[in-house]
Length: 156
Image (cartoon, rainbow, N blue to C red; front, side, top):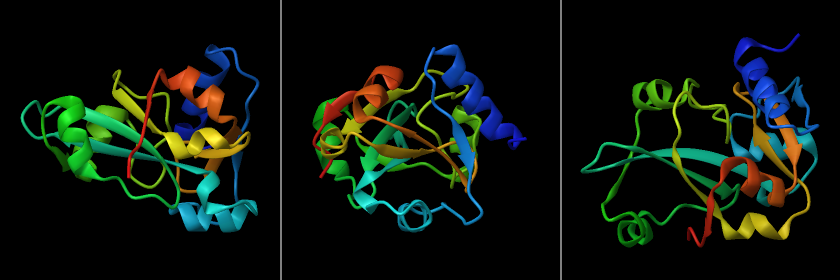
């Protein structure tokens, strides 16, 4: 039995037609480093789903980045036509249906404009959060791009 949030992610994967399985870890995967340690992979193979807010539009923006990378928010001003702001926990929950620490790349309450870190595209195997701080699922970077319909960009 998966936690309710993780079950929602598993159901979304099933509905999309992918045979990908959400697993529950005994250790926390709240941070990219914790996830990499628990999974025995490189931190670069962790797909961090970060929610930002457009400063003017107040719309959510999802940026999925490689675990060791930091998002250069200034790059996105030109891409989306407005500054990015960090989203607080209430905003994230309202727009995704998930709490910070387990934001998955899919299964959100509403459609969210999505960008994917080009650095993730070099890996055949990556891991993404699945709705809770200790649930994840393995997929390829190509499948990540397909299921999120994200735009692949340089985030650094």
